Length: 421
Image (cartoon, rainbow, N blue to C red; front, side, top):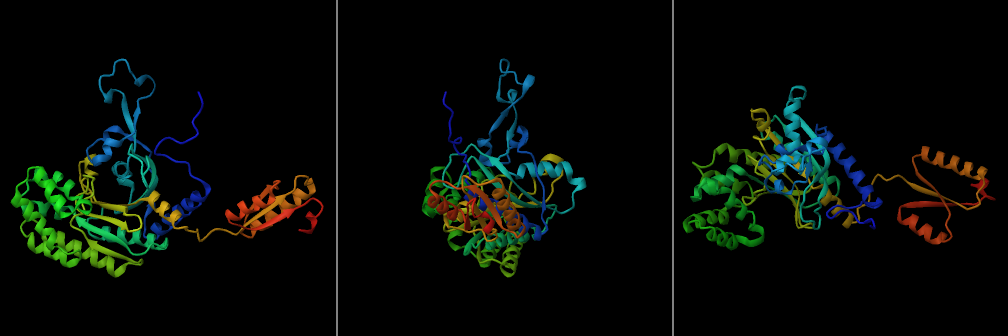
């Protein structure tokens, strides 16, 4: 049987040009986030299947790459259900593993704990532009901080990073799950219907108000509730005044401190931001993961046509492991989407070393080779990136390829003239 040279569907080989950007981006992310006090940590790529299927990951739980039990534990002939065969899975995000990590190590970690975690995750999703089945995630989380300082620092750190990559005029969309619930309760929807209502609301940017109204009607909800609900969206503005309107209109359904906290986050980020972006209150922002308990936010870019980062507060997840709730808030950058946009924009890594190549003729002597290697050593000590390679028959094409790879100085080395280099 002939071996397959293409990677598995939804996964990809990474060529040197992209790898150069990825390496630079990883370094810049760590440097920037550490300036904000975040500490690098790591969790295994394999997680207990019980943790991954704990109804905290929303639709991601349908996309788990499950791992069979190993050795004598794998008993195919007597298995009656999936759990008889499976005891682990590849992580679908970094948040569930982080929560387990914190629950297991809280006694030796600072409080609050500002975590930076980067690593591959896996989802059996349908591949499309900017979406793969194996992809890098980059998360920053603040655990043990109940105040809005967590949200403010997460947003400022993430937007500072995007600014360093020359992204401009992007938008931070921000909302609160408590506002979503208060709007639904005010309109007369029952609590058991919230998830369905929010799933439909999440399509607002694609189907508009009329489309949302139609789907709500098709699901059998009362017309007066639908009209009352959608009337709110017509009157709420996308700024601090919109937050204040919610505070006043939803009195009795929404705690005043929720609206006050959101206003504080928006005004603080606006006054302290380092990058060029807008902050927009968006009452239609839902975010699918069911573990979010409060503030939620996304970064959208017109050039991508969707979100490139997102996160929120998840104060209940760690309690699933410890029995005691711990304040937690996180922001995840769509690493693969950022890399894709940088490649499409022809981004040049600003810290690339000067690249120099020595081309050796085929009959180069031992003495000549040693001379070239000595020169290359001196160049490297001077901070240059140096390549020594044999000269090809089509030297012109070879030099063109090297130039495309960024080699600005190319030296022809012949045995009879190497001493003159």
